[in-house]
Length: 268
Image (cartoon, rainbow, N blue to C red; front, top):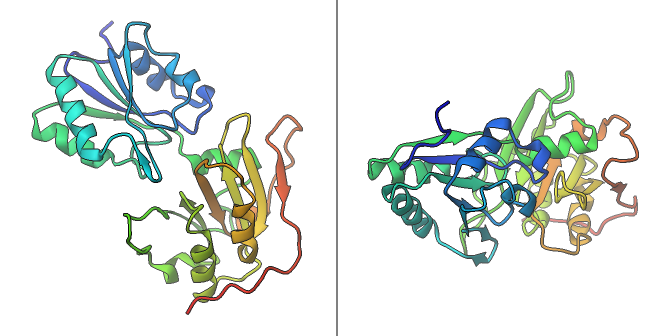
């Protein structure tokens, strides 16, 4: 049987939301065949433990305000390793094609004449919904599912079509929503989304220390503020998130915010 990765080839591999059991079988094979792995900050040690003992695992993670490598540096590392004949895995949290900059890395590799392929992974929105026992789409309630990121370039405002996002017939997933939570709530309400719209706030999705909090749109800023560590925060907003199945007690803790009146959030 041929090796999953040829020398000089690069695979962009989705590591999923964190739980190693949510890796695809193909992702596990690729990790196990790599000679060098460039991994993101959110990739867990349990997943890296699947790499061969002789493989080099190099962190290239980018967290808000703390970038170990710039994107250009990552591109250069991938090109250099491939040209040296390494079997290269670029290991990304979630799915490489969902806010994972996969297109930039594939383009840099292609410009150097290097073959690059993509192995998809489970994205955080899917894992959070599964953990909370909700459906991202729901007949008669949510006919559409929208994904956006609240992470903008340094010093730049969020540039989103808020009118389109404030759709009561859709479920909205906002990745990296911690810092922008007050603006998100204000802009969505300003564009017509009801203040009592259901929201699921999720952090450390799929991991033993997962946080899942049910809240409402006008309480979102206070809810996010209650998460006292720097894990990336995912927001699932929409009526479908209020309708959930009863999960076994072994599932992650799901709590709700108090129903007290939140201070008025305004957007001029």
